[in-house]
Image (cartoon, rainbow, N blue to C red; front, top):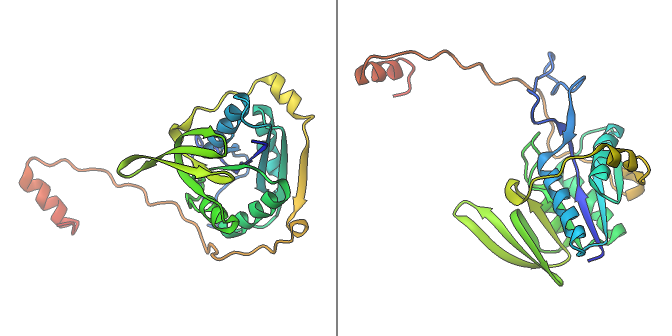
Length: 249
């Protein structure tokens, strides 16, 4: 295998409590720790392990967004990616546009495998990988919890509602990663310093020939209502009465 393309999305760190802006226009990000989407970090770790086994030569990390996403790409380079590409856009884009961006990069870079996280923790859409496979007209294997490569074939174990399912897909292909695929490595300080010298290219949507579009737009945001305090009941009859008072039975 010559090349693997890996998507890395910039999201609010999963340890941070998400807060809605006071005007309801979005999620508060000022002064908030941002990180690589955890599922994407797993995708990059799997690409690194494939290269370490001698089954790939180059790993390219890709992100779409504002210039601030360079920070997450540098983290990806410190983990071990060979180079990075940031497709810059100041306005939000929908999943179909992101899939079209990845398709344009696929046509430029000619990867043998595209690894993406199964979903991003900020919107949980779980769409980009499937859309890219459809646009690229190549096989897809989603929710991967195990992956083995053999020649031009990838054997992927998927986590589905009924348990585990193993499928084989011909390469090139799109694979989206699940939590149990691996545990990403820690980034060491020497690797962070080396990452500063690795190439990170910035490309605009216009250079890729893509017009940004949004099929959906968010009108307003609001935090979920606070949970009310529980009440104690003495017996089953009291429970039924309390539920009836709330109109639940």
